Image (cartoon, rainbow, N blue to C red; front, side):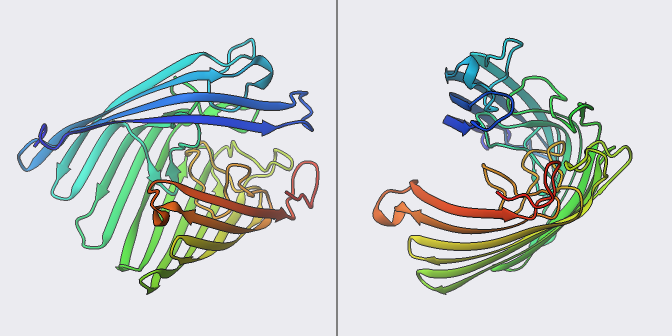
Length: 346
């Protein structure tokens, strides 16, 4: 029922962010800030009847713990005209939802996870899009979803349409539509296919193949392939970084393989961008980059860039400390075509 199936949670995040900018032309040598974020989420159940009705509500609060005028710009907090980060900020929203059989329609403020429209949660507080989504699980092993979104609140902002792209234009999200699905052929093998169109930005096609296989009780293999095909649409407001004029028409793909033995996971990945311009995202959600080498330091998504990654993960639950994990990795990129070089490396 509406009340009986309701849930409420508050997730707390303490985040320290530091970035070395000693070679930055702006003169700021580093960005370094610490914050505390609270993410409250209420999800009701559905009323009885053929069509069930429910509501979801989101409340977000960010508090600055440490910063300074010369250290702002981490993306954790809104920044004032004086260059300093705000002491605190908050935002929230709600959505009404309807359920018919195994299909749910949601209207209002909501987090999104589709690979062509995914809200970002990489800083203190997440992005919060506004729109309509529908998710259907009517067919066994097949998940279908579609969405229509017209605005979004950026991670470190409190107002709608605060996500913009292509410096100089500052045009926010007008309209984004997507449709797609995931099919589980077996418990170990799934495929995905999605299509999206963001007005005056681009059309995007995404596909994924994922395979996992248990070799024994404590060993497994996993392979994951992702590919995006992006082409500018309408005004093409986001252009190639190399010249800010070339429209986007490119493919970006990654192939990742992982071997797990007990608490240890070893991963190798390769990623490449080909065609005109960088792999573009952001206006369609800061999380819309389901590529293996997209990490906090860089997305390795420049025109013609190719990159590879070696990674090691340690799950401490095996040693009696559930919830604790350790990860280290090395990523190398080359061949990037940017505004300053035709063979950039990182």
